[in-house]
Length: 350
Image 1 (cartoon, rainbow, N blue to C red):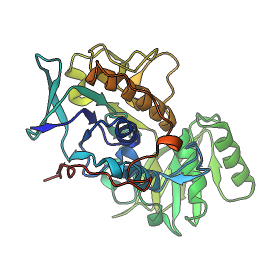
Image 2 (cartoon, rainbow, N blue to C red):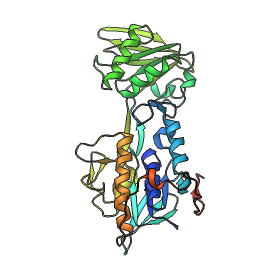
Image 3 (cartoon, one colour):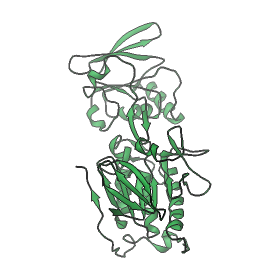
Image 4 (cartoon, rainbow, N blue to C red):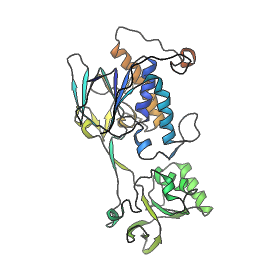
């Protein structure tokens, strides 16, 4: 039985930052994640993708953000159960919780913070009959390492932020970048749309709208695609076809925990502490929903901060915590002091 003050479900950026805020309150954290390493989507799906809305970082790669967060929480020595999925939760007589993973590992804590991002997810695939036979043979639904596109002809399909951002990024990597979208209008950020238009005018991106990819050609690897634009159909040669139509999120077993769910997200009270309908269980980051919710990493950081204050009061109802600025109080491990703590409990993927 692994015991901790705050049990965090999900080791993405929001979950990791929760460790820091809890550590300032002298609260111990343990994290569970189904992935074999911390970082969530930032580490697993797009470690090389630049992020632009983290304060004090005009641009930072997702993987570097995770590395920085891990360094930031190092003094608080959190525990990790990696490669395991939180499966069941049982409330105890003292209002604490026992969470058991799919591999039988049990965790006991008075507070549970669900920071599972979008949950488990699968890419949305376009209705192309031959697409499955080219998966991992030139068809990729997620860009993990941009270097595989070095000096290659790449065709991206999609109209959201990922399609726009990767089209922009790959202009400095690929020999040729083509962006295809079924509409003339894009769903992504306005500045990204303007940047794509600018790159098109410079001849660095081929933009084809409104159009759809109808088929894929090749023997053992992608060699080209069939495009339909209005009444016209034509073939484009390429080395890689990357349909970026988003991810289909699923909450998984958490959906059966008795929490109030709305559109595949957990409803929380954002007027105070992001607590769910079950006292002692919080939901922070992309996994939650409330009026005015924005699915941004920096919003998850804010939610984690307020959640930890509430968790402290739940764990120590007779104590009054007086907040101290880190510029005044410092952070043990970074301010010249040594932090003594038990070694992190790690159960790695088997």
